Length: 112
Image (cartoon, rainbow, N blue to C red):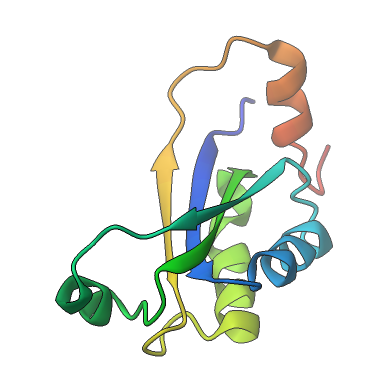
């Protein structure tokens, strides 16, 4: 059975990306990309989204859909995502992937 994959996007206060990757790795999510960014939204939008500083860490991870709830719960526990200024996390479905090897790597679950 094919396990669907989702793209996890995290926008976090600067220097929180490494903590997020540690949580992801602890949950057997090993395909992670950390990049640094600077927000361009007006200050009032940043305040609504809870981003007090325009310097942010952006993390992209491929997560098996069987792990999405567990991963998000643990990220929230470590990074306080529900608090103002904690960051933003969301998933997007991946509908196709050109590499079967990459898919097999990302879809690893405890059952495999």
